[in-house]
Image 1 (cartoon, rainbow, N blue to C red):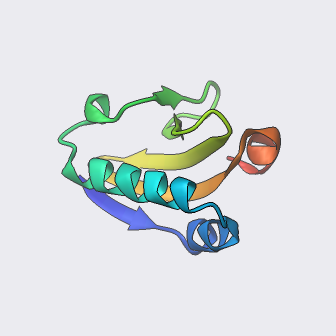
Image 2 (image 1 turned 60 degrees about the vertical axis):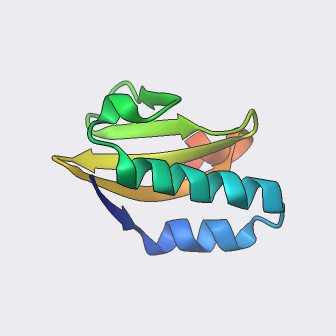
Length: 89
């Protein structure tokens, strides 16, 4: 699948200082690029009421917000679970 990264996603990752979280984000990006379909992504859940928007839970505290259009995955936001749903979608 094609992977696009938004400017907001890049800014959100620059705010994260924990190296373990950055490694997990990088692994998620690599996994998404190598995936043939959405079912190949782990911990993926569609957001109810927002068609095409999904979240990936990659840690018990952090979420990644993505938008899927055809075979293109756009990474939009990353953040901790307390305020992630206030900012995404």
